[in-house]
Figure 1 (cartoon, rainbow, N blue to C red):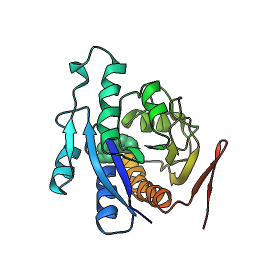
Figure 2: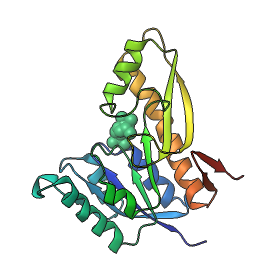
Figure 3: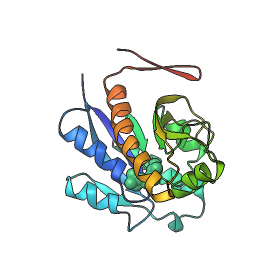
Length: 207
Ligand code: GRF
C-alpha cells in the first residue's frame, strides 16, 4: 500500500507532531509528512520538523486580509503536495469552511473526553482548568475527524486519565499529554492502514 502523504498544522511546541515524525520515520505509520505549517514563527514544532528533514513553513495570518485568504494559502500549499491526510497537532486557529471542504480527511487531537470540555475557548491549559474547577473524576484525550464545528467531528480514539485530588493544571496536562502522544500516532497509523471507516457520527475500526 502506498505511503499516505500527510500535512500537519501546528501552533506550538509540537510534541504531538514529534510522535508522528518518529512513527513515520520508524515505519510504524505507513505515511510520510510532506509539509508542516505553523501560524506561529516561534513554534518549536518547526525546529522539530527541520531536524527531521521535513519541509516546514511559517505562514503569518497577519499577512492576509482575512481568515479566508489565509486559509486559501494553506489549502494551496497542501494541495500542491497532494496530501491525503491533514493532522491538526496543537493547532489553535479556526479553519475556514473552504479548508474543511477541500480535504476529506482532517484529524484533530483534543485534551479532554469530547463532548466534555471542548468547543470554542477550550484549548491548551484552559481545558484542564475547567476540568479541575468542575471536579470531574476522569478526563482524557480524544482524536477525532474535523467537521464544520469545533471539536464536533466523528470520534476515532479516546482514552481516560484519572483526575487526582492534588492535581494542578500542570500535573494533569502532563498526564493527558502522555495519552495524546499514544493516541494520535495510533489514529494516524489506523488511517494509513486504511482501517478507519466513517459511518455517520461513528468511526468503525477494522481489526
Ligand atoms: C497540547 O496541550 C495538546 O493538548 C493540544 O495542543 C497542545 C500543544 O501540544 N492538542 P503540542 O506539544 O504542541 O503538540
